[in-house]
Image 1 (cartoon, one colour):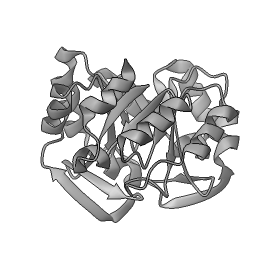
Image 2 (image 1 turned 180 degrees about the horizontal axis):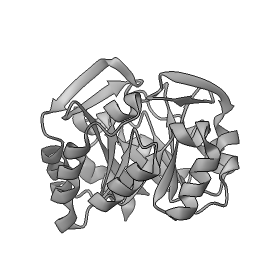
Image 3 (image 1 turned 60 degrees about the vertical axis):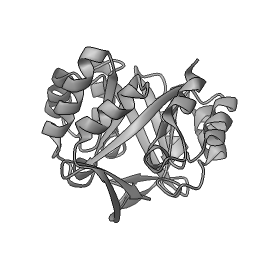
Length: 240
């Protein structure tokens, strides 16, 4: 199982939200690049970056902070992916040029599926489908809106495209330190051939173990690392 430590960026700072609620924010550091270095020193081989302002506003507001992280990690071979506010071909090209390994696209995959299909063909295995779900329905725009589209239905639509992975986030568990929704994650994995990255609620080492035993190929760990309920080194043992 691949482990992706999460670095969520808002206003240039490293933060975490509870259930995607912008009013329930905890600041963990003024420098995302410094946090990236901390996880690298603890053994991280890859990082999951989120531009929270971008997810909400539809523009890559924290571009400079993201670039600092990528440039700092590049000499060490640490992969970085980014989600949040990626809603144009120009933005995709600009971010890939910075050195990001892959980009997570969620809102526009739902709202403009034909465009997303075209981008997947133009940038094969550089794009990740981000599906955030609340009660099984796709949530968009930084989780501020909940659609009437079932999450599994959206995943099936893009099956067979050259997509790097599918990040599946259960909004109800994200940042709540309550454990991941393993059954829903497994159901999503069964609905598509795209490799699943579990996101949301991973709180203790047993959660990582349960996902690994369910044959989920990767997971994102956020608040648990910052609160110290999971030591990154212990989680990384599942990569062996």
